[in-house]
Image (cartoon, rainbow, N blue to C red; front, top):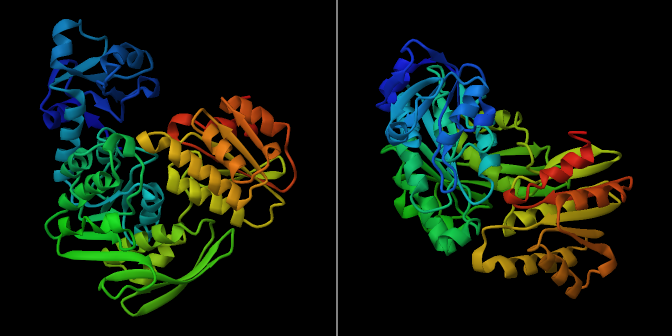
Length: 466
């Protein structure tokens, strides 16, 4: 990140320095006071339950040298001990800062959204483009109306492409993100049931994802999963240039990058990628057949950016999975599939498939937590997952959480012996059980929704924090 002066920040946010010097520099921006460091700027976010202004003193105590602060808050509170820029609303000011900063750069934007696979696709796209361009991507899950601007203000003049994951939980959120960073290329990986509790239906989810197409630059390119009917329902919002991706050819989709000759070897994939008459054989050294869609999307971005298919494939070779997304970890002689970042019905099925297809394991254990934000579908989704677990035939099922008990209940009904099922209320209980039942060549999938924090189980098994 470049060093920003308070004077620059005030001008870009339409703010006023009410305490401090224009020349004061910051080199980091945080919205969690616990992450504040010397030379950082704190941005207090006003949420439904918490007002970030209440944590300005904590940020200052950890070394922050300045803060944004809302006009209204400043009218009713004494000035903090650190430097202050007065703004209308801190979150809005941050977004304004990011938007105006982008206007002064020459960088192009790839925006990526979808119900699942968007983070993996983002990582793959970044790997592909880095073979030819200077690239900046959002780290971790900084894909919201707060996280995305934090990434954008880190952009430097040498960055040619920004690869930005765009998340949402309601209508209008992706529209806002595209106003901050208008995509030259927009990708929809798929449309599933994640956030259905908040949006009500899969069609509403599709409409929310489709906002990324409405936000594309006038001469931009849409890249859409050509095998996903809900994603295709949004094509009318796209510009003239559309590239589809999927499995196998589709004569109705003229510009289609597709995968053929797929061999799932359990711990890796072998397949061919086809684009405009060219066919290239690839080996992907990571598990998960679902990844062929993410790969096809990433390669489609590469060719859309002017790369040859071969150059894009070479860039893909530098991809490595993001944290807690089907990461393989060796722990005490057995293997853990850490897929704890998040979960929905589709990704749970993907995780189970990887668990059962991965070679060299003599015992396979599924540790599954609650799937959240499913609304009226919650009970049926967990029951259906229980039936799938029994059908796939895991050696042991461990559930964590109240909703996940329905997974266990239906698994028993579907034929999985009760002696092979354990249900726990907490991650610690599940971790303690796993520690006492370790076996050589055991393969353990650990997966649940973000709110379940199931990485705690992985950390406990690994001895992290002890």
